[in-house]
Amino acid sequence: MTKRASLDPRLMLSVVGAKAVGSAIRRVGKGGGTAAPGLVAERIDAGLLTKLSAQLPQGALVVAGTNGKTTTTRMIADIFGAAPWQVVHNRSGSNLVRGVVASFVEKSSASGQIRGDVGVVEADEAALPELVKRLQPRVILLNNLFRDQLDRYGELDSIAKSWRAMLQQLPPTTTVVVNVDDPTLAVLTEDMTAKRVCFGLNEQHHRLASLPHAADAAVCRVCGADLAYKALYLSHLGEWYCTGCGRERPALDYAAGDITLNGDTDATLTLHATDGDHRLRVGVPGLYNAYNALAAAAVAREFGIDWDVITPTLAAFQSAFGRIERFAFQGRNITMALVKNPTGFNEVLRMLTSATGSLQHPTMICINDLDADGRDVSWLWDVDFELLAEGDGHLYTTGIRGADMANRLKYANVPVQRIHPLTADVGAAFDAFVAAIPEGSSAYILPSYTAMLRLRKVLADRGIVQAFWEQ
Image (tube, rainbow, N blue to C red; front, side, top):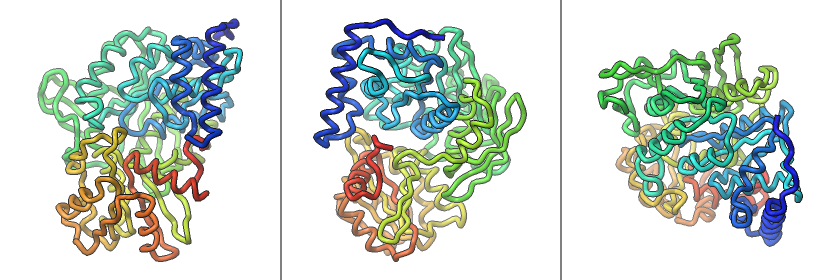
């Protein structure tokens, strides 16, 4: 058990100063104060995060991965909250060091005492090593590693190299819960001093026939030979083996199978663990959310949480802002699903078309190319938009790169009469899109990250959704 810190004047000044900045930002309506307070806090006391995290009785969890980390951290935070533990969590999704610091400041008293039992931290891929160094977490969860925003962070090898160095320095008291369906993560977590806990799928039905064009791991990271699969589930995730050195997916400590995907509503699965089989319902749809739920349950068990807490919490779970977020507007039922890289986009398209093999509902795709999206949008050519070529659902495009998106749909053989380019202004495009949808109908919006934030601000200003930092 950790003990509460004695009074630390520098820490106290840092917390008070950061709280004042956050309060001022919210008071003048300039945002939720999810990052700037962290910058102020660090300027005053660079050791703040280490000092506060050391006070947590249950320790800290850090979650990293290209896709699913916001949803998975929220699942875990909900489970911990039902334990019941007081959770310190960067729930807004501000996942660089400054955002994590700001979230810890928010949960601290003016005297520098943390008001929480456990930390649940979502970490940006590039920020993971630094956050692990500062937080010294009890558990690290590694979800996946896909290509994402290469003009910001470089090739996957750069991220993998930094993660490998960090993992090799972990003490034996740390547990790494890792998705070993990802061959890259399986190799990165070999030969650690830390304890490794492996999870993945053993599923008979939801399999891919071959590696998608957007897959990011086709060869062994050790010997360079081709990878092959006994079962392939999502991008390069599956039961893999190397045709050269003979490496294969490690044995699973937690496995999910018998998965039922219920369109865009929810999913059910059977989780196989050392203490038996457990049937779970997940309140969000898609195979990727079956992975997220499996990861959340595995982490919760490693923290000693009972199944009678895990099971109802996952069933009641609602998506994070912009990730399968549903709202009603002017008699239309609209679902928003964030799309930020080829793998994630393909899984959303797979969800929308799986029932009939075609797109049946009006869909607006919003693509920006700001820094947080990645300036290079050539990744759109790696997405399987050909899945949208069949069906009656019309497609509307908007955002800074809306014209590029419309052009990509034409090359995907979507009939031109179903493609409707709209103004680049996401707010104005949303009104035009809604006007084109018959009242009582359902529709989808697929935005890139900054387009999602812009659209949600428009909706929040109209009182349709809550601001993301309030959720």
